[in-house]
Length: 149
Image (cartoon, rainbow, N blue to C red):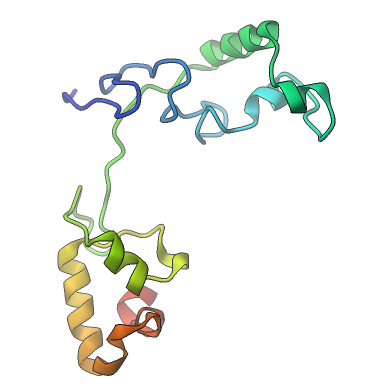
């Protein structure tokens, strides 16, 4: 194991998150535990608008039942997810800045990361074929390198 720790609750890699940590994953759906709806589904609670649970959340007893279900299923320990370049696969690469990302990369591609080196390679090849368009978002949309992701 490494010495890495969760930035929210300081759990060491391989340990369980502290209760309420926003980095803990739900063992049922894999999403963020504090915001998924599995507790309501697993406890068969109606959370439609206007219901008591919709306005108040879980009772103390329901919270205890939910914690018991989590323990039975097996809580998910913290392990740092590696960040990978979608092009070359480099682990924890140097990425380009947020300003560059939002300027050149359309929102539909924001879930795909590209390291600085691959980004520069893409920029050079696409600029060579369309140098005038690099100043606006149409560059990113027409860029062959982004379409390959």
